[in-house]
Image 1: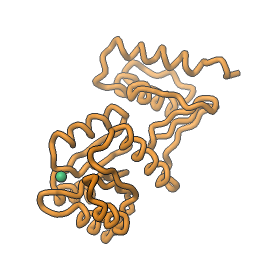
Image 2 (image 1 turned 90 degrees about the vertical axis):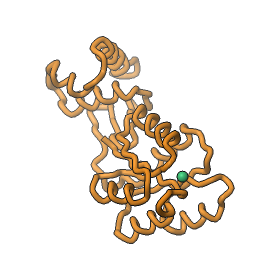
Image 3 (image 1 turned 135 degrees about the vertical axis):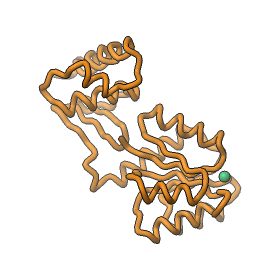
Image 4 (image 1 turned 30 degrees about the vertical axis):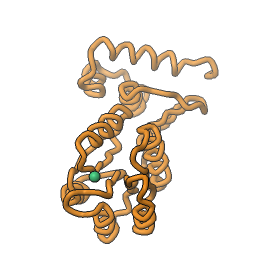
Length: 204
Ligand code: CA
């Protein structure tokens, strides 16, 4: 699962962003100080960092300087107050890949997250492909017969499990572990919807 580290000290903002990222199928770790964020970045496999500039113990720009100084090439999107063009410029000069001015819409942030993951993924083994179905594990996008399909996080998890076991009959336990925590009835609704999607008209 693609892991995003959010370094943000305001609990309402971090809860809002983390909830949205999880709903979009990403893993999300939160650090509420610069030091906590750096510790997580150093100890975990992180695919992208969303970094607030105004942190209680140090500036987000200093966090960025530490990361780049230590050789981390992880994409970083900085969050700045709308008015603070200086922070934005300093962030980009300091090695940020993108920025968002606060307040922002979550959809826009999500679009930037996907864009940055996609441009960074050159070396990453991020795709599962079977016939004309392709699933990008980093950007959480699915194409069937060349068309992008909009899947929920649960459907994505199920499809990922199917594509990791091509041609196999999967046990109930395997499907359960793929969608752990999802309600029993909805799992089968998702299976049904996936089945009809994958059997859509344009396929041979
Ligand atoms: Ca802040």
